Amino acid sequence: MVGETRIRVRYAETDKMGVVYHANYLLYFEEARTEFLEKLGFPYAKLEEAGYMSPVLDVHLSYGESLTYGDVAIVRTKVVKVTPVKTTYAYEVYKEGQTPGEDKPCVAGMSEHCLVRASDFRPVSQKKVAPDLYEAYKSACEPTE
Image 1: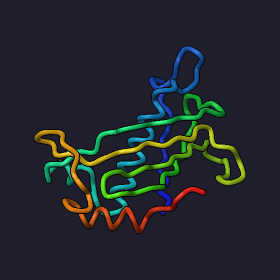
Image 2: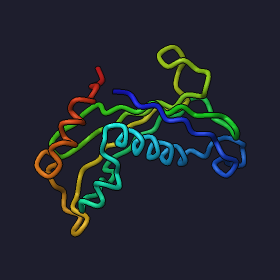
Image 3: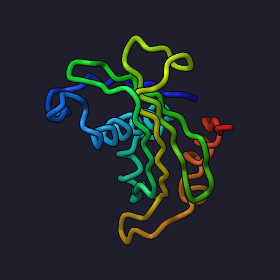
Image 4: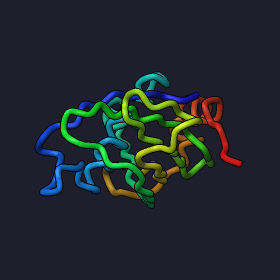
């Protein structure tokens, strides 16, 4: 499963050079990941209501073409690895009008997350405490080569 999230670049997200400030892509990833979870049927708010959080363990970004104010970013999101304890997402950011698979993404990246109890921030097995989410992740998973 590949989710697509449209994000219009706001002026405040750009730097003095007029391009999206590099760290703002992490915000785009978060928005896309949240939307991906909603499409899976597991809004992040429900995880929090159940007493769990999903912190970032690792993140990587690779930059290509810059996005600027007014551009529309298309963030393609997918789960590429899932274990009982960790989930890895991959992201590709394109400028509206580019063709995924043909054009090089403006930004590519990944983020790795675990599930923790909100009360003490201890990691838990999502397979045990959120088996429906774990199965949804496994069904949606598209491993990379």
